[in-house]
Length: 199
Image 1 (spheres, helix red, strand yellow):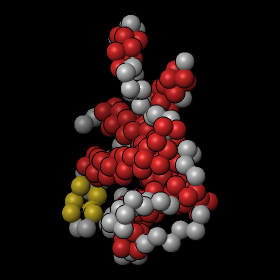
Image 2 (image 1 turned 30 degrees about the vertical axis):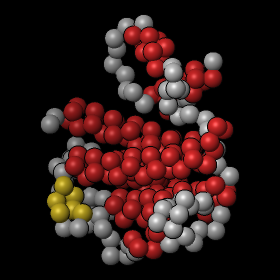
Image 3 (image 1 turned 180 degrees about the vertical axis):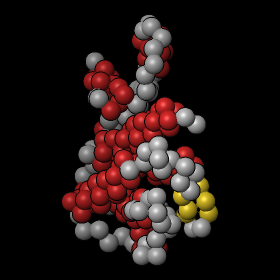
C-alpha cells in the first residue's frame, strides 16, 4: 500500500468513526436522563451502560495505540457493565473522553509508522485490521444505542436515516446528480441530510 492509499484509508476510517459518534450524539440528545438509564430487563444494557463500556474499551484500545497492547492491565472490563454513572453529565463526559482518545490515536498514525504491528490480547494486527476491528465493535454498540432510543421515544423518535416510504425519492435525488467522488458520511456530518429530511 503506497502513502496515498494509506492516507485515503485513514481519512475514510476517520470519517466513519465521526459518523458513528454523530449517530450516538443525535440519539442521546433526543433522550431524557431517565431514558438514558432505562433497561428493558436485567439482562439488557441501558444507553448509559453501553456508553460506559465504549469509554472503557476506547481508553484501553487507543491509549498508547502504537506501543502497548490494546487490552491494558488497568482496564476492568466487568466494571464497565456496572450501572453506577450518576447523571447525563457524567455519561457525556465519558462518551467524549473515549472518542477523544480514539481520535488522538488516529492522528498519531503516519507513513513512517503505518506498518506497526498492533497487539490486542497478544494477537497481532495491522493498523488497518486494528482500526476495522474497533469500527465494527463501535458500530455494533451505537446501533444498540439507537435501537434503545427508538424504543424510548416511539412516535417522537427523530429518524437518523432515510424516512420510511422515502427511499425511492431519496434515490431519485442521488441519481439526478452527476457521478462524483464523495464520502457517504459527508452529508450526515455536515447536517445537510437532516435538513433535507425536514423538507
